[in-house]
Image (tube, helix red, strand yellow):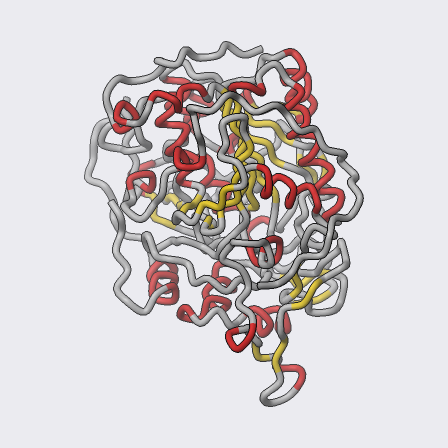
Length: 484
């Protein structure tokens, strides 16, 4: 166990810029698997004050897709905080069309989109101090036809600017069906203003940092653009801070990280050009960061990073671990220019597998998209600290205990996923260097932020478990939406 040391509070210059850009007011930091028993973990903590129904959830499955804003998928969903209409309808400046020209939201029928650049600096410029008017300008200035089509600095290959387009049940009927039947979260923000890599780091560890030297957890500072690298480690990032699997292993809670093998998304480091890489279970990458974490190796848990097909085998047998993460490959990710119909089919197969599983009656599926992908959203992100929150993304909760047809308006981020898992399986133990037994220099404990809502509100643990609703991976188009 490492000796305690003074915690490093500096977030770095980029974090300060992000903070200033997010809000006009001051930005302050808020302070073959064995299933665990409902009482697994440490006693005491916040979860002991949460109604016991949370422990009816014995399997949490996090499904993380790619690069869609809330408005681009659910901006016309009835009752949600969607795209303003009438006099308030946004019309964003279009620099290519001349002075005074602008683009308005429109229904996008194409399953293949270009999106926009989505690095940290692009989020800052899209947000534009809370005006949320930089999306078209950033897409117009991005490089089209990049060598690496998934590059975070690029606009994609389709050619036209489509960041103001939105989809509905005509293109993504299964997503809208789940939103109607279960829980839609309309104020879920990506944990960070950064792109895929920092978003996935927050998803598993509540932080994205750069450490110099790269093996010292007390020499890490927040970084939402180029995390994890130090001199001599450009090709082999090392993440020495603590991730959630450390606590899960410590308290004998089973977990697996399931990887869909194929292509790797954005260029490492946000570079403009790179060869299209492979995404493999045993190769650390942007969507597969756990093999980079020091504690995963220290605990001998690297074998818990598994191929996607193992998830389907375990679901069929009723042996899902307590905590699962599911990440796609480039083809089924919905990351532009990937076809969203392929992405929806992949997600449907995952959710159908859980619904058909003996584990369905004790499961909760948390479905989201890691960042906004350059697509328009009209809600300014609130500031929790110098790194975020990022731009709003869609969020769905699917469970036999999920409330029916409920829209959750709480302020949420992926930190709420960590919080729910910790409350369910660890009795409220946080990724907190002062209490978790493994100090690092993170500036705050994201799960404890006062602004953060609680996923428990999305469940009705008094109801009888709802039966599964298995959907077709390739459904027929749904009805047109009626914009509010």
